[in-house]
Image (cartoon, rainbow, N blue to C red):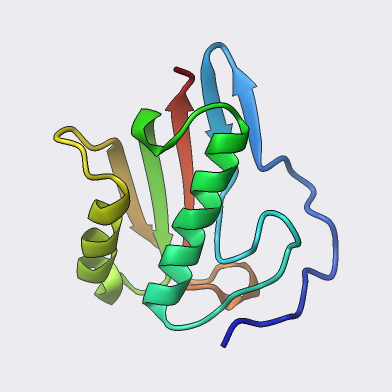
Length: 123
C-alpha cells in the first residue's frame, strides 16, 4: 500500500532542466512529483511509479518518453534486472529504444529499490 508520508524536506534539485534543446532529469524514484508522497512497495510497483513520474516530468518540460535518448537506471538488486527489462519495454517500446546504463548501487534514498534519470530531446 502506498505511503502517505511525504518527504520531510523540499528537494534541493530541479526535477528537470532544459538546455540546448534537451531536457535533463534528476533521478526519479517512487516519489510523486506533485505532492512528494512516497510510494515504496514491491519492485514492480516502485518501477512503474518511477517511470510514471519520469513521464510526467518530461511532459511538463515539453517532451515525452518517445524523445528520450539516454537513460540511467540504478538498482539496489541486480536480481531485478529481468523484471526491469520487461516493464521498461512497456514504456520504451520503439524499434530503437534509448541508450541505457544500468548499475547496481548499495542503497538509494528512502530505501527505494530503483532510481532512473533521463535525457530527452525537445520535439
